[in-house]
Image 1: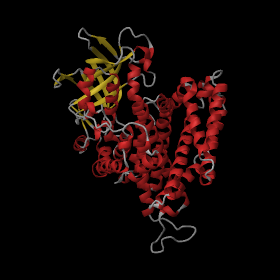
Image 2 (image 1 turned 60 degrees about the horizontal axis):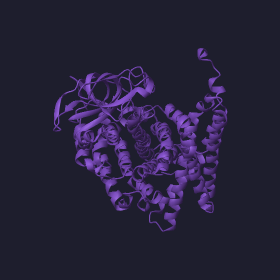
Image 3 (image 1 turned 45 degrees about the horizontal axis):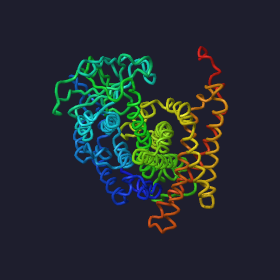
Image 4 (image 1 turned 45 degrees about the vertical axis):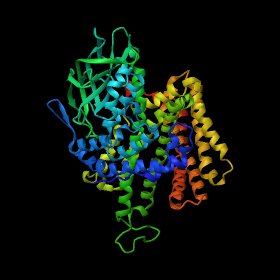
Length: 592
């Protein structure tokens, strides 16, 4: 059975050596000294290794069961969820006014990585609750916040998001779920929603569904959509639970992965709901939850990859196969370990360099969210809005690739269920699809985010890269291995943006046909920037006489690998983009 250990040292390196969080002017960051963050991450790591990770295979094997309208979660899940609640982990970065601990979002992100890597399906129950909490916190009335948030912070009550319907996924304008206003100010919600993660389960007293529906007078398309709070059990004036609402689970889906999380068909048969936010402005309120969820899914992309990589690395060091072509490395044994072979080493370096780069990128993104929310920084808000589809789309694509690559290290054993590697690949696959399939993320990036506010956010990103290059141009240790490749990759990204500007208006397909390549191109540039920053931090630590020289030297070597072996993909993506729409659209639909 696979194991997992939280990479606390690597997380500490990103938080303190690279981001230098305690020197930040973001409120709350000064309190995040290395001793405090290490204590938090180590405790989370113990819970993950001892409790959550051993249940990962159990959840995959048993799945969830629907019995008499109630979903039964896998053996051990309920007790593990209680431990998460008892330890205050569900409240880590929530508002103290509602029982939260008030830590910055970056700490919630780091702890979230640990729990996802240990047991993605189980962590989804609290992850979705956090998103629903954020939507109510941002858009709810004072009464709604007082009613729901304290018990959602503690996960005594959990939450969901209900968007998709059988006939509409991304195109929410086709939505059929209806909300009829009632005399008491409530609404009757009628319709069916599908793919509702954690829509029903036995681990919480109540489930607070956030449901998109069309109320009268809203017009056509997404402009007529409103968002409603629809609890499984109605809540009495004194906060106690009342009668069961008119909603039910039609079935739970049989899925490729994340078997331990109940993915439900939800039927609303005149259920009582209350408007959240403004009437006919439901998409604005829902995007509060969706944008947070997309960052969370980006974490899933590299966190599952981390767990898969850890196990592949251990196997490569232990499994004896063949002899090193340059000379025997294990003379006492019948063969050398897999890790001596160049192709295995390449595979592991692909995995390691992606996971560590993605972690730095995501933690940086989380710090931008903290800066936007805690400092009211509009520039940070615009930048993280630009980067969100990259964090979600690029990292889940590459995270799945890493899970498959880790499986490959095992050879035939990787295809056998008892080794557990197929679960990582199956679980990672959903992250490329939900919260907006990655093709949609790419379209959002190119069609909306690049042009937002006159393009000032993408220009700010380019300025950030240029500023780093200029600031460090005199450092010969960084020049050839890091700065020059980053400069070339950034120029490729700017070239792609220029191509869209010159061709996209007269032929929108010219931009849309290249959107997926642009998302990956930008992802590589972002990870290249992170690796350049990590190399600079590692050199600084070595210059200061760091005791663990091997750790910092490994950082530099891993970064050099990414710059040499991964960043050249930027030229390929640019060439594809500049080929335009013609190769993509030349074949008539009827000719397929």
